[in-house]
View 1: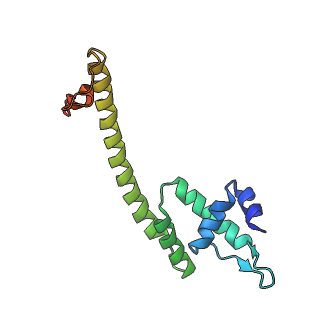
View 2: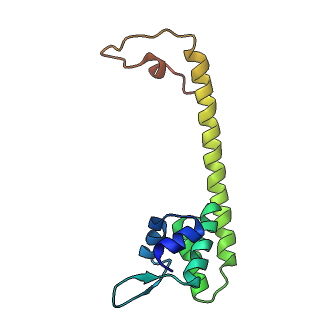
View 3: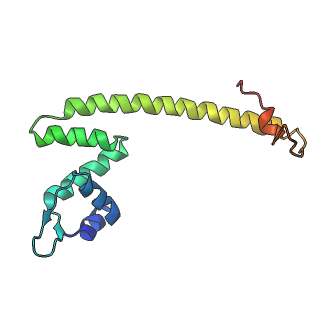
Length: 136
């Protein structure tokens, strides 16, 4: 199948297929006469795997590492477990940072609703931000 066919089957853009081809995750056959790439069942399965892995938070580098193990007929499951734990820790950290940001934003909304508008001066652009307490 051609790029557009593979993309349509998996619900992605042709550019997504081209990206994973460019970085070597997909290795379609190339017609020597016209240079067209043909994607087979192997590429379909690999791209489907990639899309599933991306939905679980694996990075492109993670996926390449996992596929490298599989391509060498090594079980990638240990690597998958290690990487998902790492991604989970990173997600937990980002979640906590986002929660703290939400709390600061709520505090700003509350504080700023009681303050007047002020014109900028040479020393101040917007007093709301510049006077805001960073402590939550």
